[in-house]
Structure formats: structure tokens, C-alpha cells
Length: 261
Image (cartoon, rainbow, N blue to C red):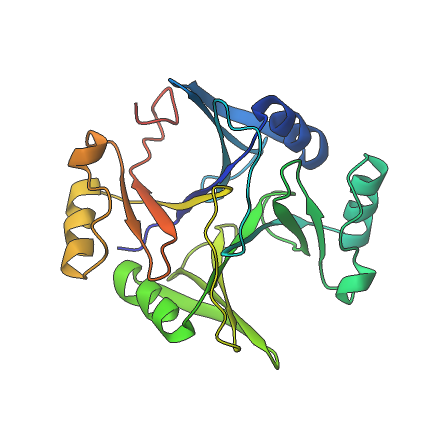
């Protein structure tokens, strides 16, 4: 079971304002939209994104005017060709100055979207410009977190950064293409705990067979959170050791809609 990451879902208060922000500043386009009973879901990504690249899913719930981010959720990172030029372009476009390249040692930078979700800029020579490079989540036990992704999903650790007080571990499916999105697991050494909030939604993994892979996850003792039957056999959800939700879907490339319903 080596499914690649399909999308990262975050919640937003004003769906139209968020769509406009991602279209204006990241050159994203609307890939699909579903207006449900009391909620709206949209998929967005670069216009010419590759098949292995991940989308961002924006979810807006009717009547929810404020989003609480929490600290268990970290950020999404997008790829740019020239870090300084990309940051200057965002500043010229009216994006608030949050963490510029100089304050980050010239290695990366950060901005925030309208709801306060952090977006890291990383310089890459692969993948579509502004495509999702990785999603960062915080974990309370690095050994458990790495073991979870290795045992449950056959992911491998592809790189790491260890500092004096924290470490970042990146995990991917084995032999994943460079343009696929990674998961960044951030572990702080001081034993802190984290708070889940409604701003952070989930990671989503594309599978070959929803039911067979779900059964394999159950054998591997993944959490039985929302099985395929409870989701009308369209998708399923499990959780990692820290409670981060992970959606499981089968994506039909020939379907008219990106949504399974």
C-alpha cells in the first residue's frame, strides 16, 4: 500500500474570499466544486499541475464565521523557482509580510492566507510553480509517528533536519516522483502537547482499492474511524497516533467530477 497524497484539506470562513486569494496570489485555478447541504468544498491547484501533484481542498461550513487554527496543524509548503522574487511578488500583490526570506536565513519564507493558515515558500526546480511540496503536522512522539507511516502506509523516511530543540522528518511513498507531496512530521524535544482545532482538516491518500486497502489497514491496527460502509463506500477515514485525520479515496482519472459523490 503505497498511495500518494491526493490533497490537504483546510477549513475557511469565506469560501469566495479564499478562492480569490489562492487564484490571485498562487495562480491556482478551481478544479472542482461541490455545494452540499450546509457546506461547500472546492479543490484548487496550479493550472498545469501534474498527475502526481496534490491539490488543496478548501471547506467552508455554513454559519462558521471564524476559524481556529490550533497548533497541531502546521502549514502547507508551495514550490517557487526564485524565493526572493516570489516573496516580493506576493508583497507587491498585497499579501501581508509574515516571515520574509531574510528572517528565515534565506532558505524559505512564510505568508498567511485569509484565515491565518501558514504557507511556506520553498525553492524547488521540480514540480509546477506554486504546487504543494509538503504538508507539515506536529507530532508528540517521533518514534511513534515514523513507525505509523512506515507500518500503516509503507512510507519511507526520505530526509530529516535535526536541530537543538526540534526535528523535521519527511516521509513519502517509496519511489514517489519528485513532484508528489510529502508529509513533514515536526517533533519538539520538550515534550509539549498540541491542540487540534477546526481549521485543520485532513490529509488524503489515493489508493488502488478502497476496500482491500482498508482491510489491510485494519490488519495493521490502524484506527477504525470511519470505514467505507459508513461513508457510502465512496471514501473512508482513519487517524494517526496524534489524532490527525487521514482520508482514503480511489481517484478515477476519467470521471467527470473529482468528487466520489
